[in-house]
Image (spheres, rainbow, N blue to C red):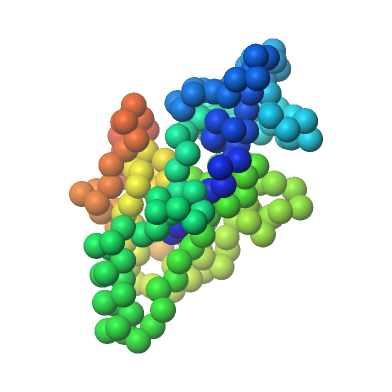
Length: 202
């Protein structure tokens, strides 16, 4: 999967501003109460209703509160690319198999986080093609005898991807899933989320 973000994204500083017109610093938490009280509001007026709806939905669903991340995986920058050693291995696989690697793009809708490769944290009305359940990917994965999962981060993207697969597969199909624990790590400060994920998934 390829996280593919814009600079203006709901989980980046540029999307939010306080009364002094100052953007939040990375790792700031934005809660429903913060938005209702005006501590933080979307920079663009047309996104203010959505901003409140978004943090309200996160709270209702019991997901992570909105964390403002450092700008990362910006489309067109080096941070958006696959790391060199992994890219070399993927290209070697393409040479050997005479097939194309399937890259799954996620996170390119600026109105929602998209930790899971299967669906966004909050589905954006009218933009379901980018944010709703990716049944095509689920069906493709289900056709394989083994599905190996690794990557960054075990507290967030890997965590929610595996949970969404588990929610949409039968119990017998879950035996196909293998999580490579030595090929991932949690976001610092979110180690408990990784621990709970691994415990829940057995």
